[in-house]
Length: 209
Ligand SMILES: [Zn+2]
Image (cartoon, rainbow, N blue to C red; front, side, top):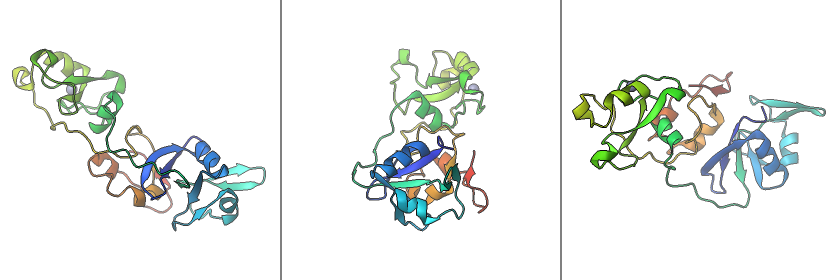
């Protein structure tokens, strides 16, 4: 529970990243952040404990009783703006492509996924968002140092640079909480994986893709 995820907002309520419950409690305790409840009310550490806000959230058992787990916190004196660019990395390319081979549409285990230069390096293909895709090992091998046309394979989707989202980098199997949804509007559209799978029934607190 202490390692589950909490959405971090800057002072303007823009999502900037995701942290652990443990770190969120430290921030709230030290006064660096306030907990946000479903009615967008904010609380310092003691206020949060006393708020009795346990309506539908998770609770951590302590010697003094149940302590509600915040799913959203807002920083009190830190004005970092959301990043505007997604870091170009293996994980983020896999995330953009939903861990799906962009040639055969299979989703093998991660260990059997590679990155593929659509236009091979040897033919002048750059190492960019627009030229790198997630690819399974067999397709990678089959395609070799050829373009999709030369290899007779079809690219499922044209690769693009994704827009930044605070959820980039969280594995697709990662848990996202309903409480985050109001704050993520506008950040989700490019990585449409983020739009899927939100739990809508009140009893359930989280979703898995
Ligand atoms: Zn494949």
